[in-house]
Length: 124
Image 1 (cartoon, rainbow, N blue to C red):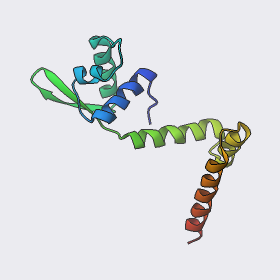
Image 2 (tube, rainbow, N blue to C red):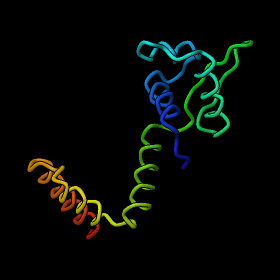
Image 3 (spheres, rainbow, N blue to C red):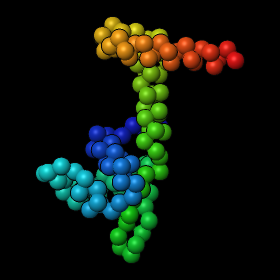
Image 4 (cartoon, one colour):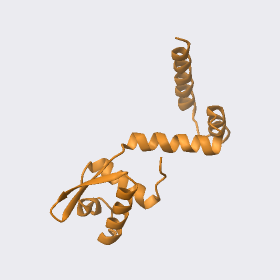
């Protein structure tokens, strides 16, 4: 799975939200000040080259749409993060969050329930 730049990721988030759009549609989703048309167009063309976005031509206009879902990208990035920084260890990930106190008690209870459910599924 290709890792996207921040600018590419911003455009992908917009395309995931609007599903299909022309460059002008993408630019409309940006807050002011809006980026230049050529900048957005260049980034979208890079996403097409990376086979993450495709398009449908309408004469000289192109309507772009994502080839991967937000969920697919999220899973790929999380897998890469866990692999690259946590040696593919869920234990190390949980340890990181518990040591940095990023989990409140409610979240910790939910994680424990999820792990128990996962264990039950594995035992079946």
